[in-house]
Image (cartoon, rainbow, N blue to C red; front, top):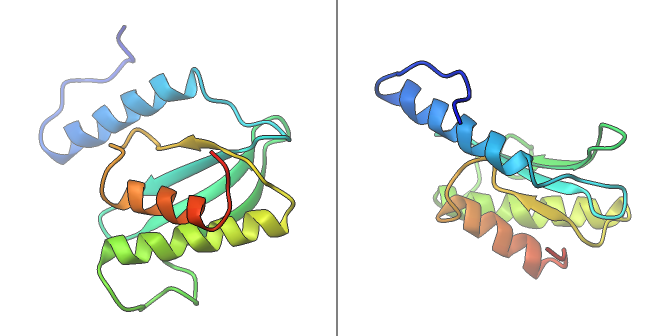
Amino acid sequence: MAYGQKILKGDAYKRAAIKRRHIRIRKNINGTAERPRLVVTRSNRHIVAQVIDDIKGHTLASASTLDTSIRGGEGDKSAQAKQVGALVAERAKAAGVEAVVFDRGGNQYAGRIAALADAAREAGLKF
């Protein structure tokens, strides 16, 4: 099952592996109006979470470490991911979303990804 990626080295190899895993995940995960998709995008410095209705192709809510309420905040990257999780859950509930399908974006469910998901659950989103 090749996805058309060349053999790469270093960081390019890691990004290609994440991309392959995300493609595999997206075969089975789809967001609907009743249960949109909560997708997490992670870089070395920032983390972004979006609640997306894939049928309409609309983003219903989003939050990131680049938001003014979180930017420059205290704590390490995991603490900032928790703040992003709580903020995206709050915005999703304001948009009328109660339950979501979690899309980890090809990343391991550990560290910042798990912290964001746990904070979103604590804020009231159902996975």
